[in-house]
Length: 395
Image (cartoon, rainbow, N blue to C red; front, side, top):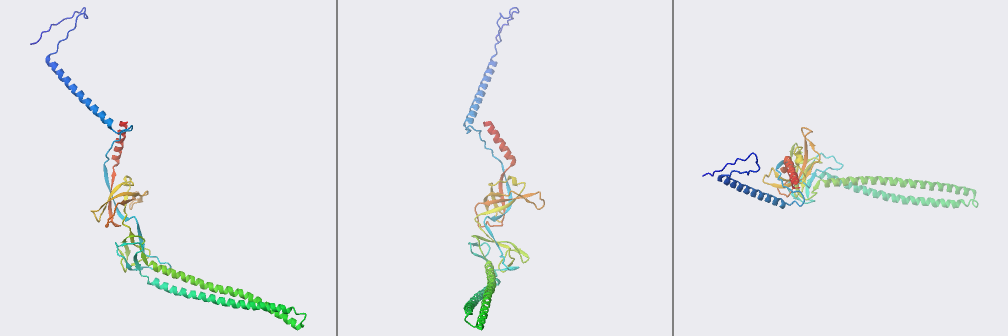
């Protein structure tokens, strides 16, 4: 049933005096309004709870009066560099350069095998030194002969000096005697006085001549002895050079380590030396390396070099032993690049990578691959911007 309502027409003359009446809503409209109010209440509750949780999370963040620090994971990429292993501590062994001799080649008569562990002072290689030993023996005999000649001349000079000093003393005594005789001129005859005068003149001349010749003889004798001494010293130096050359033909280890042979040009081919081969003086044919600390020398191009920094971690893999992986880090970066083979505009930079740990298979001159984990430039910029925005929002 519907409820009838009476329609009231207000009086136009007095609109304020008449009461206003509105129609009552039906029942289905009241139920709709109730459901709408219920959903509005639920939505307000959810928003309130979300706001409370958000405020609680912000209050628990460790800001301490500073901007909150946000952790941004920066994607990374692996940069592979190729290089060669080398020892941090090593010494090259060169064929000896002989003093005072022009020798085209030296023959190896004894050599320690490659890969042998040696101590400091151990014999590494011995060259044929018969010529140097023979030269040393000859010069030693000549030196001994000159030493005897110098001693003989000195003895002769001492005897001659004693004889000359005796003659000079006798001439001096004779001169003093004639001077006493000349004082008797008043009591002797005229003839005896003239004879005494002649004896005095003769004694003076003899004494003066002996005095002059005495000094000349000493200078001549000293000059002759000095010549022999110079020859003796020169022979001694030659003997010592021969002895030093003979000692150089035996090369000993300068440090504790492992023997490594270099590949050199010998007898028209490239290869490692062995006993019986001939090596030119000054050629580095061997190394003694300390395998306790190793490194890799790589060349980085100008495009990859800006992404490298000292201290970056890396992994080293040997081409000869793929199963071996060593932890490493970048130790040195060259400040100046080297020109390329095809263009001076393309630069390469030397990078030294130090290897942590060692292994018996890790030896010098092995090709190796170095994997360096570097961050992308774009990711770095995004991470920096995100960190800045987070700090600005927290402040």
